[in-house]
View (cartoon, protein in one colour):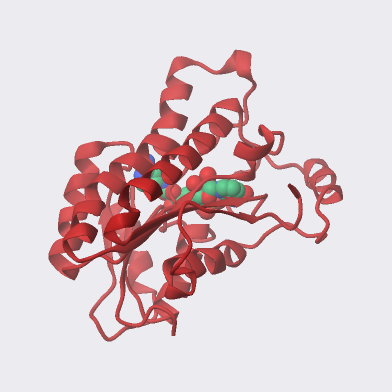
Length: 253
Ligand code: NAD
């Protein structure tokens, strides 16, 4: 039990096969009381209801659009009201779109950057005052191998830009809030089998991608959840501003 007695907010954790959901399940198994923040309140509540019970109280599901500052503030207040201290924040929510540079519209740019990067800022801003008040915490932010290698897997250049922005934001927050006991790290997964790619990942693309992965398989949601667990727990007590690759060796650098 690595998170016994802790509380965690996880964004983008309602979708059934997603990384956030797998993380919520793992954190509950390790004793954390979890708040699932997602776009659809009912889906978030349903997901929370499936998690393993913990002694601190019921898991909760709350509607939150991470790209909307006010929505983040309202959801954070609701979680703080239920939990008191929020010990862990997993900035996991994200969306993608496979388009090329010249095809990115202003609306596409706003949407992809808004959820993937601005969402990390807004939700962190909403939760950090609570962590400060309670003497510290751990924040992990979802980036992508796409940020490190300039895409080429699935998301477009706007996705790569947003996920690269997350790395800079997380490192700057790590520097700013380290003295207050708040650690901030990032994860950079390769291709993980979830529903984010919809039906756009063809068998040919999959075969091509597999050729470039030394561990010869695509990632599972649990592979990333395990890294989030490490970053959320005291196992990583002296780790901040770090970037954790979870990519099967797709990018070795
Ligand atoms: P997913 O589609 O299963 O999960 C994404 C979740 O985010 C969903 O529950 C969705 O409802 C939620 N969400 C979307 N927009 C939101 C918003 N504005 N506010 C709150 N919640 C919102 O996909 P996933 O693959 O589990 O993706 C999780 C994260 O991992 C994303 O940030 C994604 O960019 C990142 N990522 C995924 C992969 C991959 O290969 N699957 C690789 C690298 C990074």
